Each structure stands twice: as C-alpha cells, then as structure tokens.
Length: 122
Image (tube, rainbow, N blue to C red; front, side):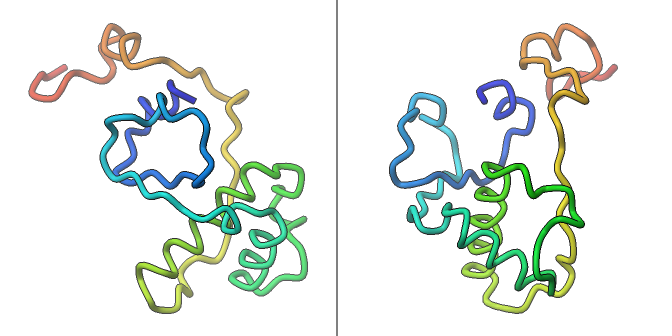
C-alpha cells in the first residue's frame, strides 16, 4: 500500500475510523476520516447499484473485489456528501489490477528517469 500511495500521491485520502496502519498515512495531506458504515460491502453495493441504475455489479467485473467495492462505495458517498448534487456523469466502475502492472516505489521511479523530480526536465 505504501508504494501505491507514493505512486498516486492523492490530494485526498479517505480512511476508516478504525484504520490500524496509521504510520502509512501519517503526515499526508488531505486525510479524511470516514465512518465505518461507509466501507461496508452491503452499503457499497447499494450505493453503486443506485448510482448506475443496476440490480448487481456483475457486468462491471468487480463482483469478486470486496475491498475495491468497499473503497468505491465510500468514495461515492464522500463525493455525494461534498458535492451535494446528482452525479449523472459517474456511470461506470473499472477495476485496475496490480498484477497487470509493474509497481515501482518513488525512489525507483526517480532513478528510472521516466518521472523527473519537480523542476527537472527529461
């Protein structure tokens, strides 16, 4: 998870109120503590089906990804809470699979030359 946080460097980070690995997120900006119910699988499925107008999520290929569904459900609830408007432009969900990628930590990316440090040019 640490490598993914380095790679994506999110502006905001939603985490459950009982998140146990606080050392992973210490000092990060944009931390948003969220209630546990927002991460519940049943709540997530209900929120996502309501958003997409579906009875199930089988057609999206995410039905066997409970952690991803929980995260997506929480994210959707957070966006609804903060935007306070309908979200008709959110019509689908896609799962990104780590096994389809090579994940490099920040130091490796800097050394590869593909992603220069801010202010440096390739």
